[in-house]
Image 1 (cartoon, rainbow, N blue to C red):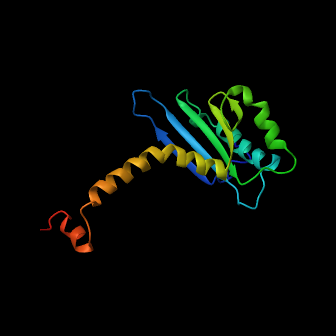
Image 2 (image 1 turned 90 degrees about the vertical axis):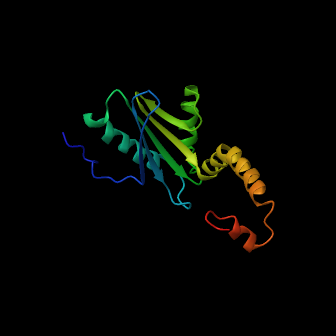
Image 3 (image 1 turned 45 degrees about the horizontal axis):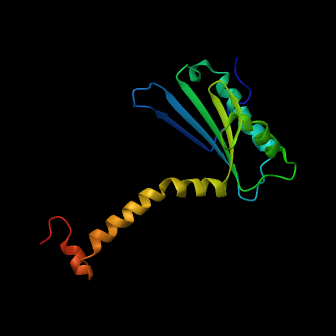
Length: 154
């Protein structure tokens, strides 16, 4: 059977194979919405269609495949539909999760949360790089001093 929505296009598709002894393919599909577009039932239904298309094709549903779908926007619409879905899925214990079925999960995120999460995840690395930068540049007073430190320069 050919799914009627099989020609739909996603915004971002990421596929990662794990190399830590656990075999599997982790797939992520991200649907990005314009900052002026509020997220509601229509936008979440679009992502659910993507999920149904993938679920309908046996090639993408091996036991070692996992799928994450992420809907990202600035704010939720006035209908409170997304808030209701988040509340309904709260028992799964995952922030932003609105739907979980077998090896498929759908998340809804606000842009501000995505940015904050990235900053928090990378703060340790940024701090460490700052320390290294300070240490590496402590003896540099001029551009000529910096050039002398380049490999192959005397």
